[in-house]
Structures are given as C-alpha cells and as structure tokens.
Image (cartoon, rainbow over all chains, first blue to last red; front, side):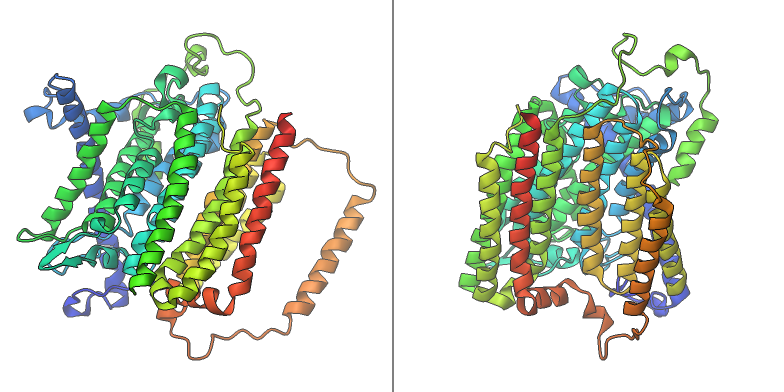
Length: 345
Length: 101
Length: 165
C-alpha cells in the first residue's frame, strides 16, 4: 500500500511522510481535483456545443450568462430537478448501479493521472509504478456500466445498444493497449511521469515522444474515440436506429451521470494522450500547467472537430476496422519498434 | 458522492409516475414481446477473442519494460509467443470469425 | 490500517463467493463474482504485488467476467429454475465438501507464512521484477501459455460455428 502511494516530490515540513498528514493531503487533493474535474467537464460540454454551432454556422448557446458561459450549470440544475423515474420491469439494483459505475470509473481514472502544476511539482494523488495499467484496469469497468445499463432497462433498444457498445469497447480496448507497447519499449517504464518526462533529443532540440511513435499515436487516437463512444464511432447511441442505446430508459440525473461520465472520459483520454505522446506538461517558457491544458485542449478540439465532420460508421465496418486493421497494425508496430530498439541498443 | 447524486435526483425531482410513462420506450408503440431475448453468438465470439488478445497484451507490458535489458533474447522469445498467437489470429480470420454481417 | 483493509477485502471476497451460489438471478451471480475478483485484487495490492493487481482487474474483472455477461445475454433471460435434485444430493454434498476441507487442511495446515527474506518491498511486486522472473526463470510456462491461447481461439471458433448452422 505504501508503495502504491509513494510520493517523491518536495516534502515541506515532512508533511507527506507523516502518516496522518499524508492522508490529509490525499483527501484534500482528491476533493479539489473532483471540483476542478466536474467544472472542466461542464465546460467541455459547453465548448462542444459552441464549436459545433460554429462548424454549422450558427452561434450555439449564448443566452445564459455572459457569452452563454453559465449554460452548463443551468443544464445541470435542470437535470437535477427533472423527474427521475424508474420504468417498469427494470432490474432495480443494477439499473441504479450502472450510472454509478460509469461516474466512479471516470473519476477514479484521475487518481493516477499526473499533471504538472508548477515547475517540479506534479504528482497529485498517486504516482504508481504501473500507472497506465491502472488506467486500463479502471476503464475496463466502463463495460459494466454499459452492459448493466443496457441489460437492466428491460428495453430492446437498451439491450442491443448495450451489447453492441460492450463489444465495441472490448474490441478497441485491445488496439488501444497494444498501440502503447512501443512507447513502453522506448521509455522502459509504465510510470506516467517517466513517460511524460521522456524527451527525444535531436541535435539541440527536445522533441516529444510522438516523433518515435507516430503509428501508435494514430491507433491510440482512433481507439480512444471508439472507447469513449464518440462520433464517428458512436454506434451504441445511434439515435436513428437505437433511440438512445444503453441509456434509452434513463431519465433526469441518472442520465446526466452517464453524460457526465462520457465527457469526463473524453477529458481523461485527452490528458493521457498528451502525457503519452506530447510530453504532458513539458514545454518551453510558460509554466507546466499552461502547457498541459493547452495540449489537452488540442485533443478536445480534435474530438469535437471529427464529431462534426465525419459520418457515423456502420457496425460491421466498425468491427472490421478494429479487428482487421487496427489490431494487426498495432502488433506489427510492436514488432518493428522492438526490432529497431534491440538493433540500435 | 455518486450515491448521493442518485439519491438527490430522487429527492429533488418531482415524482408523478403513471402507467404510460413507466412503460419502456419503443418509438411510441406499445411494447411487444419480451425485451430480453437471445442475442447473436457473434457477441460471445468477440468476447472470447478479446480475452485471448487481452492476455497477450498483458504479457506485452512487462516484456516491453525490460526489452532493453533482455535484448535479442527477449525479442526472440516474444517473437515465438507472438508467432503462435498470429497463427490463432490467421485461423480465426480465415474461418470468418471476424465477419460481422 | 493494513489489517483493516485486509479484513474488509477478505470479507467482501467471501460474501461475494456466497452470493454467487445463493443468487437466483444470473446477473447478480456474475456481479458477486466481480466483487470477489476486485477484492482479491486489493489483497494483491496489500502484498505489494502492484502488477498482479492490475492484471487481476484487467483480465478477470475486465475480460473474463464480461464474457460471462455476454453468455448470459446470449442465453436469454432464463432464470435458474428449481431443477430436480440428484438422489441424496444433500448427503453427497456434505461428503464432497468434507473431503475437500480435509484435503485443504492437510495441505495448508503445516505451512509457515513469512515475508521473503531480504526482499525490498518497493521493487518486489513491480513490473520490472515480475518481468525478469517471467522472461528468464519461467520462460517455458510463458511460451506454453501461447499454445493454450491458440487452443482457446480454435475452440471458440468451432463452438460458435456449430451453433450457427
């Protein structure tokens, strides 16, 4: 346990090594992080609505507060005060459990995502030896949220949407996992902080890891879009054929929880992508937290951009893409990278 | 926190259930037949293949971390492992296990 | 602190195990099994086996249990019916359970638990440490795993083909 929560940053007054102080720090950090995360997520929703509005040549939300900035807060309150009923025939316990798992998994991911706040100060809650594996493990729990949500709702659309979505998630989870193996080979560590700190030296330049792992990067981006159920891979909630997919029968705040979890996951995969491929908070001149936010925003913009640009895939082409293209490509990528690394030493 | 969110939505929100509303949604048509019917065997096959390649991936992670120390020895032993699994993938592919239509 | 976590995880694991058997709803049984898996992963964590912890969650809770859920969806909503019992089932159950208990006690009774000598717990369960063991000392079991997976792949294909026709 102590190894899991090992902290190797600045340690003013022995606060971090003090058994009680350590837990106080962890709890406070978690609460602050929770607040920041929920706020950020709300603004990602807002950002998406504004950007999609712009892409479609309309203003997007601009009524509530200055420039519509309070839109998300108002929406949250609205969803909270909506009637939250349970349809008949649902499996009560699992029906309520599903959105809870979704939010819990989305939040827990952040307990191991490090991010730089200021020079030499990062590493909030846990700097784990196997950081990225913990993220995989937690995101694997998302399958349960979707499967259980679909199964317990007692609706055909939900069940089919849930099964489809679960099959999609597990198919792309493999491509996602394998796409990162070259990165691990090059860095020689699964610790996220090590990966973020790894810089490629070309002459006087320090380049991010991306220059050595471009194929892995592309596979990761595609698989991550599929993992978060986003367009053009948003088959599970294809409203034209499946109404709302696994959350068809969810209303009020229970629906909001699925929604919140989805956007929180988008922020997480963007953050992880920036750590794995763009060096996270590394950057010249400006403070780390700025670079980190900038890189995360870049990925978020990319997500929203492709959502409003690309049409949805058909389910069989989606599975074909995952199994017949991304999986073999990811394995080939591992073999080639391993060969090069061993060859050059 | 998560529990309190669900609870809050029940407390704060109004509750005016009626029979129509509680019915499951089927595009406005009264639901027919039971929702939980048998599903395609495809999903089973996908899950089974997922387990196989997930285990492969899990072996890759520790290997990737120490490949720089193991060098050719590590590379060859993983190529053997991977070769056998590629045979499995090729077999599944040829037998149409990856088709979804 | 450690022993409190151990106790909680162990109780959850045992409760889940009982739940698997007692629940009539197959989904509830699977969820109990997931609880067992997650509780076991916490136990691994307490033993400083971080990598095994992650693998336990990824493979068992994340993959194998999902397969179980898919199979239940595949079979449809057949609630477990009170099927006909074997003749003298209670009697047989007691004999088998008793035999198993005797076997367990005779095997584990003389074990002496101790922490491995001169083990540095900060690296003991790390990926690097596991990897060196796996890819040097235990190389053959590792390679054999691939054959096992090959057999599983072939088996899955033939099972699902037979159902379709």
